[in-house]
Image (cartoon, rainbow, N blue to C red; front, side, top):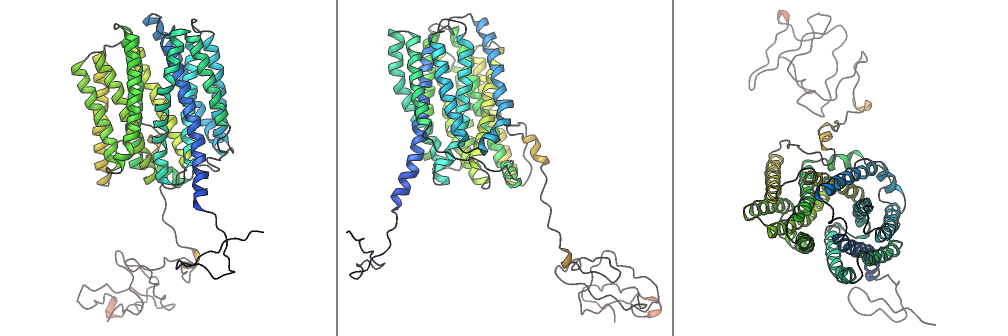
Length: 525
């Protein structure tokens, strides 16, 4: 029979012989449990990133790039319009219901992994068919939906607010590293066996992601609807500024992707340059996720966010003057680096200025709007055929205006003024009409009642908390004396020199503009 070891006292010496203390659970076990929760999400996210990388390699050398530019534009525009539907209508309707379910977001991720497996197999056997277009866009919608559900799950697998800010940076690093590793066998399969084998390889990876998703925690993201405090905090000026700026960064990423997709098609070795730009963008996304926590330790969140859009503005202007396919690749990397660093700053602002908000629900709602901005901005280069420099200058000018907007808004907040609201990233046009909190009214017990039954406020004007003087005796009401000036005697204004209360009039006119005298103070000589 084993005995428990004695627990030493606070002084550091051993306890007397024969005395044992209660065995406490070491804190490392708590760390291991939480780490495993984040590790499950990280393994699921890594599998999804590897599958996306393999699918990108397969689609890069497919019928998508062999079509005529005009034919490709019409198909891309059609399916981009269809992609609006999930983010604009479906997500706001079913999102709250999913958040109230135990394991609702986990179920969504599991369904998405199954859909990705089916889509990968379908694309593998239709790699040379025009059916690849709708299948690829359904896969894109599934990828964006996964990003929303992942954002809702991250707050449930961390221990503190500080870890929540860094968790997305870690997930970004993981996806970048795993994606780079997964590209190598995907490229070998693409060159030796063709896109069919590469897409089947992606289907196997998504199957692994499904197994990882079954181990995610069953969490209720938001058991109740958003209260008034949460709505007001999420529509505060600083959060509105950050949300608008972050939405522009995401929109710039979508615009740049489709602009380069069509512009590189007209260049020599355009497919190679487009692949290089995607690889460089992934590398700088990973770099931004690694650098952002270091910047946050030294800079304010507002400084990081305005620096991100300022960097993008400078990159857009510089690439406009330089031009060429290399400039397009550099712009793609700059957009993704700015979006990665800006995202961490935005999440830190939300946590700081909306402490009462449900993190999972709030980040899922923000991510839905950001994905909508990505899709919406991508429509512009699909509709309008433009030279490379024109697309670069559009990105630079838009980012420059966003920089000025953020700086002006920040100064307005510091000065106590309202901010401009040119965007509606979160239904922000409704924010100014949110009901304001009304001051608390005194209870009935705290409101004295006059003899006639009419209530009187507790305390006269200028003397809060002081009860009013007792009413005059019946039949002896008069006109009160005028309050004396500072340092002077009271002036009797009652008729015929009588004292107040003896005028014989049947009513008591209240003085206009003068406070009631406190009890014990004489109202006349």
